[in-house]
Length: 151
Image 1 (cartoon, rainbow, N blue to C red):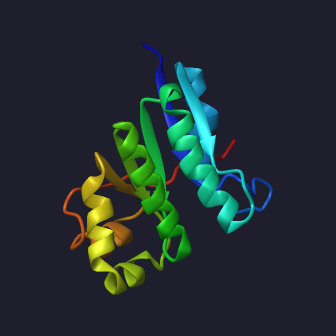
Image 2 (cartoon, rainbow, N blue to C red):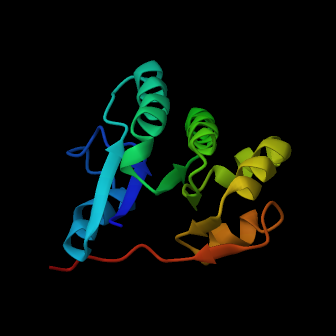
């Protein structure tokens, strides 16, 4: 069976200068035999939400695992919607936490944050700071620092 993953993140602004680790993973994993799908490439918030849910459900036979990036604010709702859609397919998913405002968001919405993190097969983050700040919402967060590409 081919290894396959769906990356759910903001793939729309590839020339924006903002770093999205999912982009690097999506580009690199095929070299190791992985089939990779990405969503969302939509610009607007409504289009992005629709694209995420539609891709997760309609392409369920094209992936075995989903990776969902989690940010604060409106983007947190997109992560919740993505997780619900992936759960409907019975595929496992992994979350990666991002953003300095996520701890503040979690303090305002602790139940939502605990439910989302608790539903994931694994939860990762790029920093010890974020891991420490989010530990009260999930006790099994793994830290994987963002890699530096110096080439």
